[in-house]
Length: 187
Image (cartoon, rainbow, N blue to C red):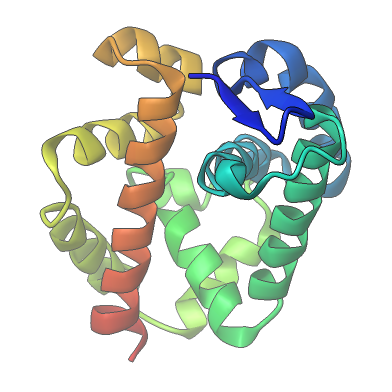
């Protein structure tokens, strides 16, 4: 997929990962919790794909992607430090641990404990699992692999899909789960 904008700069989304992933990961790694780095990078690529038609070509691809990444990082912290954002962040992190024992593991950050202030974890698991049923087949596959700790590359190999399809499926799954949690758990 090649996009030409006003004959200034050509965007090459199919090459973003190969060209800029290391650079963007380095930036994100300095500013984000380790478990959020790849997720925010995927959100960055998706936002860039959506805004590609509005790209004026006044900067390089790398600068433009870096700017989008920085906005995604700010959005993450803005949400994480609001009360509801903090609850949502912790609720979604619970799904990374298939059993309560794993969740209480001493290697996990101490902020995991604050989820118990808001809701019984068994109830949360029920809500999360019922929310998974609302996802499309591909979205459910991608999200389950991500929850199990698969990298984007491993998900692509396992499901035989490309990175963009993985990002789109994961983004849609997360949005649906967040909406579902807002409707059925946080209110």
